Length: 421
Ligand code: LLP
Image (tube, rainbow, N blue to C red):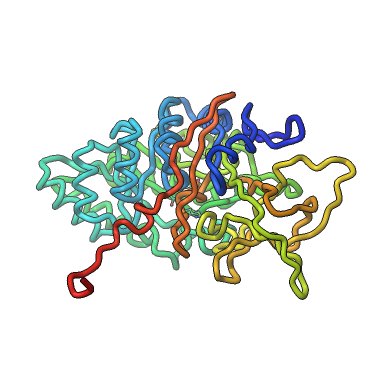
């Protein structure tokens, strides 16, 4: 459920008309709903065991206002870089609710995380483990470690966001797991605390989770039998969201939470979850304005002022996003089909092909839905297009939570070498 609805003939975010925001900040802009973020967080957290740590995956949406909204509900953070760590801390998420994942943590990032007193490092290789031991020794602390294991499970999602297969770069290969724990047990500045798994994203079937979680629980038994103190199980993120109204919805968090509890309950371990998309995707949309309607030889193009640099998911993963007109279609509105494209000079700059929409003209507005996760965070200034503004709505109030990038930020950091004068 989300809080973007037509009211009085136009699309609203909660009690604010998107046209009012557009008139004030221009387009394109991302708009997030506080009520939807809160609802998604609560539905998810309530479906998990009471003492579980719900660590929002900052890569999905790292805006400080979004993080602060979730932090105020008790959320922790799953970070994958020093930058995300800084964002989480700046948003007021305490170190003891932060987990750090990723295959390429640098020593500088490790030191920063250790100084912040993070809850857990999800370590993905033995070389990383040795580096962490060295850094922890230098900082004068012990690093709490879970190994991210690779259970070799097919998550049945898009290949580019599948992470649990043996051919991917992620996690400790299954056959090396025991050796990795044995190594960790010998290191002075490492404390083994748990096991971690994450098999992919936009997973719409519970079966791969069941397989992966079951393997992990068996592993916990084996590791404990060898004397390793496993008190936490991090089950990662990955639960999918509905992007299309006409598709079967993915399983709801209650079913996912019940599955996780059922499989892990005998371990007595504290669960950590790292949801990103589920919390943020349908809590945000991208509003754009029609620049031109262009009749091609074979297609009719709706050329809008948002582009692949703002929302890359369709170009990168052929992702489907629902697209609607901001002005509510009336019963007698004429409809047509458009390829909805941006101004970027690439054929991949297309949001949707052959999509039915009301007949639109220049200056009309559209909204690209389900864009609150992996939208703004994956955007770039390609084609020297400024990063879009971001807006957060709460009830009848709204605020710009990141202004549109200005010229100074766009090229003011470029430097002319002396030889160019
Ligand atoms: N934990 C780890 C270790 C992850 O790698 C990810 C996502 C998550 C948690 C959060 O997964 P979620 O709950 O959001 O599915 N850019 C892609 C998605 C990449 C996901 C990468 N890892 C997209 O736009 O579809």
